[in-house]
Length: 98
Image 1 (cartoon, helix red, strand yellow):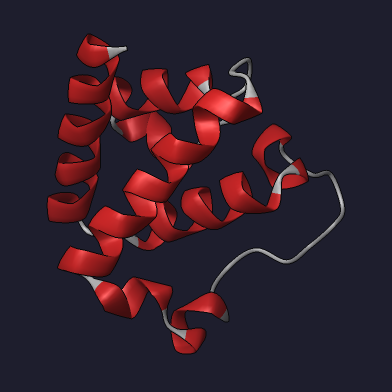
Image 2 (cartoon, one colour; image 1 turned 45 degrees about the vertical axis):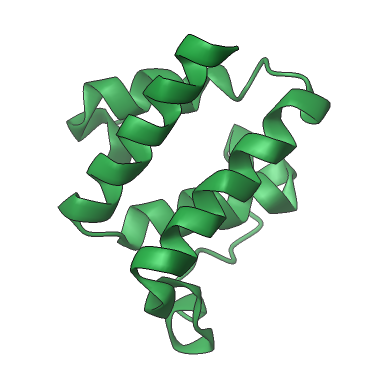
């Protein structure tokens, strides 16, 4: 099965790391991603966009068991290339620091 983020291997590799990441480490990173989106494309955080999010509880994906991860993955799935590139750079720079 192909995932939406498999089209962006750099981003996909880092997003997959969230699966095994401790929640205390993961939460500030997710907050940073939400902050980036809020600064650069706040419409992705609107109620209107939320109606496009996946709400089906059948066959949950691993990231859908955590509401914060669910939100970030749904936002990024709807994001344009410019936002995805911003998030990639943010995550890669964070990796170098931690």
